[in-house]
Figure 1 (cartoon, rainbow, N blue to C red):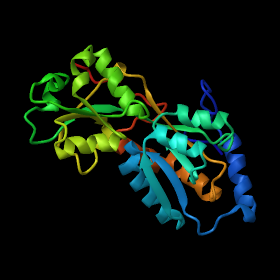
Figure 2: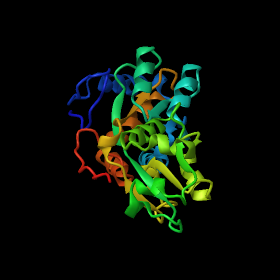
Figure 3: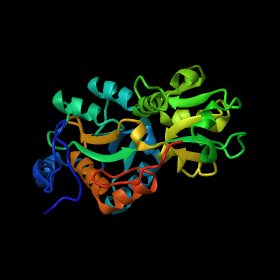
Length: 280
């Protein structure tokens, strides 16, 4: 049986084309009835950029298996700290693959279950009724005097915040704009700042910009060459109560259906190429 996605078992590891260790882990949990957690929901800690894609994937999983999925959204850095302290999750979907890599190295996760599921992208976003139009003005949107506050995720613990800062620095406008920056606890909160009018523009995840609540706004995609790749990774935790269900959930994320949902919300799938947007 071949796999249709790439697993990463350590920094620099190459993609595999077979289930390998992951399949053995899955078989062990299916083969041992006492390891099954019938009726237990799958508990997921997920980066905030996944909210809308994860809702669709979870609904698909629940229809197929009858197992419920309880998802908590937040910043990847905060989840990393919580999991180290014993937070009760089965799966961790991080917006930064380095966090699950560190958990794997620390022995907190099931060996061989770490894989890169998506690559995130960032956009400048403005509301439909704003005085500026990100889709037309690109970087100039942020320099406009009508924009007094620019929302981004907190770069201290949110990968999308770090990507935003890196892009501003690459565009050589960070020093001009740093006094305008306001930080959301995660990328979802940063988007809410712009929606509510607390900020006039934001640098947010494309997956959030494509959500139903924000589709009416104006967006301009920042070239992926302007910031380090936002490689996103998932992993099964050793403390998982429903490991069989969690492994099955990972499989649906890696399936054609899961990939299509992720792409629908603007994520790039590892191993596929995307046309680069020219930055202004």
